Every structure is written in C-alpha cells, then in structure tokens.
Length: 489
Image (tube, rainbow, N blue to C red; front, side, top):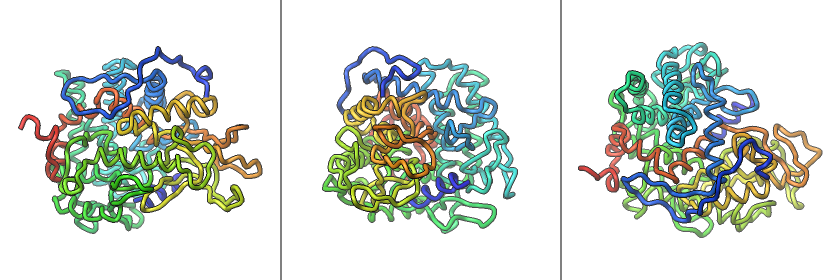
C-alpha cells in the first residue's frame, strides 16, 4: 500500500555484459545520428544491435507478463503487483509493434488485443468503492491483476485512462482488415472511447481534474502546466459523445508560461522536470511540424520542445553540480522512478535526501536528483535525440550491464553513488563496485522504450495514429495546423 500511495503522490505532485542475458545480439548496423523528418513513405532507420535487442526485450515484458485472460499488465515485475491501466495502453500498442517486427503473428496480437478490450468493455462501472473497475467511462489507476476490479483505494485516473485509450485507439486503427475479429476490435475500441464522460471530470470547469475517489470525490488538483496531460485534453476534445470545449484547452495552455524558460543556459522551452512528461503523449501523437497557437508564437513545435528538454537534462548530467558518481555525457536521465531509500544521508560531507519512488527531474520548476539514474529517461528520448540516446543506451549497458540489463532490458533504475551498507533498502540491492540497483521493471517505463524506439526506426506508431479520426479531430479542435494535418486537405 505504501508503494502504491507513493506512486500516486509522485504523479500528483508533478502534476553489463550481454552474455549474462538470455538472447544474443544481432549483427552490427550503422548508428543513425540525426533526428527524423516527416515522410509518408515507410522508413527504416538503422540502429545498433543493442537497440534492436532492447526493443525486443521490452516488448517481451508486455507479451510475457500480461494476464492472457484479461490483458492486464502488471505495474511492476518481479515484485508481485496490481495492474497499471497505463501499462495496458502501452501493451496494446506494443502488440502492433510485435506484428511489424515479427516477434509475434498478427493472429496472436488479435487474440491478446480482443481479450483486453473485451475485459474493459464488460468490466463493471459504477460509483461503488469496491467491486468495480471504473466509473463514467474512466478506469481506476490500478486494478487487481486477476479480478480486474479496483485495487484497494486508489484513484479513478483521467491521465491513466488517457494512456490506456492511446493503446485502445491504436488498436482501432491498426486492425483495419475485413475480418470479423478485427471488426470487433474496432467496435470495442470505439465503444470504450465513446463511453468516457470527459465533461463530468470538469469539476472546476473548464479544466479537467486529475481524478476522483468514491470516498471523497474529486482530487483537489486539475491538469495545469505543460506535462503529459496534453493527450488528456486532445482526447477530451476529440470525443464524439462527451467532448470538452476549446475553452478547456485554452485554460490549460494559459498555465504554460510559468514553465517557459531556459534551464541551465540552454535554449528556451516549456520545461517539466521529469522526462516522462516530454515523452508520453509523443508516443501516439506525431507533433513534428504541427503547432497550436501557443507554439506558433514561440516559433517551435512540441517535438522540438521535447528535444530541447532532453538535451537540457543531458547537459545537467555533464555539469553534474552535485557531484554524483557516474554522470557524464553518455550516462544521464532523470524521470519518475524507483529509488533506494527514504532517508537523509551524508554524501561527500553534505546531507542529501535519497528517495524511493518519486518524480526525479530537473527544470525551472524544481530539481529532484539523488544520484538515481533511470534508463528509460534517455532510451525513450531516442526519437528526439537519437545520437545522444543511442550513446546512452550503449554506455549504460557497457558499464553496468551485468547488473542492470537482464530479461526485459534495463531494470528500472540504478544509483552508482548509493553505496551505504548500513541502511535498510526499500527494495533492490547493492552491487559491489557499482552501487544500488533496482530489482524491478516498471510497466510505464518499459512502454515508452519499445514504442519510441520503433517510432525512431520506422515512424510506425505515429503513422498509424495519423490515420485515427479522433486524434485528428482533437488536434484540430485544439487549433493545431501544419505538417501532416494539412496533407490531403
């Protein structure tokens, strides 16, 4: 319970050698060093064998660890856990990647996707505090892996429902063949999306609340300031049944300016300390070359904004103002992740606060940095900063791989500075000569790795989602123009 509460609080407050592993690495390919450009044709950008291996391993997290009966994906593994509905959204999308890459057959993906969508379509909804999976079309952040009902007393989550819907809408568009099973996927996806009452979540209209609990009503916070919630507003705008008005998006954007600025002397951009806020929505929405009114005035798009945010974090690691072990131009990346302990300990003669799960990051708003490095932060930025992210993937593997690169790729986090042998760890372990290493994979950190690697390699998820009418409608209602949105008009 403490772990779950830590996850919720963190989300709310921010708003070694390969031979030790099970699969061999493929033959060498040249490294691609430049950011991709938009093209309507199929692309196939070469990546090194390690990146190919990482993509396959992270895919396997979803394929092997999901409950095949209901499609629910565990929040973390191997520690026993509840399911994260956001991880389910990543999984639904990853199955399409599996088909494209030949990891699984289309029939296998259809079977798993149908099991998942049937579960959510038939799951009990209602205001009761127990025995339901959601209410008003939204779903609880965490569900029991077997029963699929609310886990303990966690919140009905607007953003996690949104990330689930990212996968649902991907399935709706990807499975486009004249086949009764694929037709059922399309119908169930449409049913689930249409069932969400976005206007109900406007407790303090026009903004959208972060969530709701049957015990005490709506959470006291709305989605404000630039972060991953851009997808919340886009899906709410694109709804054919319960859409919010353009005033909701404008109200959200009106809170951006407190995050605009130059962090650490780099180019100006909308800052948000943890990198997941610059990644999640970009998994499904191709923001290259399209802009809303705010970004038109700033002279950049959200893709470029994420690129700047990523390079800013890398520069922070190079500067390394707190003197943490391991930080440099090739080992960097902070985002929400596990950590070793909740304690203030002496490091190099100064007290430092170490934390377990929290929203690590750096930006104009705050700095949370206890020396814990998070592989997904750099790896999932590969679409924005391919050369730098590929170098980071290679360096983390080469330096620490025996400890951190295992069955499903990189374990969630590690901390070369944490070498305290007299402190009881919350989880993970100390590795002699290396420091603290997490013992778990986390679904919402695995998902962006496999999906953004694929977007970098082939534009695959982006190309599918550009064909989804609800994504297009949401973007257009938010005032986005240019690029692929204007093609074919």
